[in-house]
Length: 355
Image (cartoon, rainbow, N blue to C red; front, side):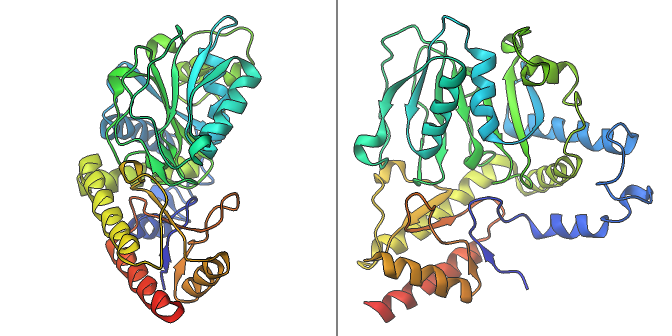
């Protein structure tokens, strides 16, 4: 029996995709082998690989001048890799320190170059975002975290600045439109909305695909672009499932459909939180995430009891991130409205019993 999976990542995937993968697990495309066994140079895999790249480009809305790359690892690797490829010795990048993941991106970028905080959410305990930004230096780019999974806040629109954007879109990838005309790089781990963990989908604008002789070849975006993301043996299973999820998304209606669905699910859950004095969410309502809804009960002990009792009722993954505590419901693309309804029913019952 499938439970209600609110995990922040790895997260719930479409049941139809999992069932299709199950049916092909030991014999993919009449090869007599699993996708996990066949060569990444085989015609069978190459077709899946190329199709995944084309689907990613089409569904994301990325213009032709952006090269999609499928790279092993995840967003944490891209914190450093994006800086390695875009920051020269005398360059300085800017960053909005919007939460836990932006903070990590800053730390990694400063290992390989210079990045300066132009807005710091720490003074507000990461509960709000800047309405606008004015950059006072000629920065090379501005790094933004589209959605903070831990802190439960999200840019509804991206700041208008006169430098290119580098966007970590990991936790709301393919659930919203992006301002491609203002971007240099968009990256994200796929384990939220797109596939199992272990893969990053990175879009690099072609004029940022440069040789970097000072870097190990693997860490240069151009290396992977020139090899069509086959410079090394790729994570074939993840790419196979990415292909299936992207097909599923396209059949549903693409990003427009999932943006509307995310808004519908999150609006319903926030209304339940706000409608009961028992729960609270401290994020500025203008910047509440449509993907990761954080909330608390009146006490830490009740937060723990809530997560424990919810799991016993088949509501999994509601414990907040270890760094902040509380509770968190992740509403990724494959999570159905029935799961949100089940959570709200449990919230009402729990509040009644512990008021």
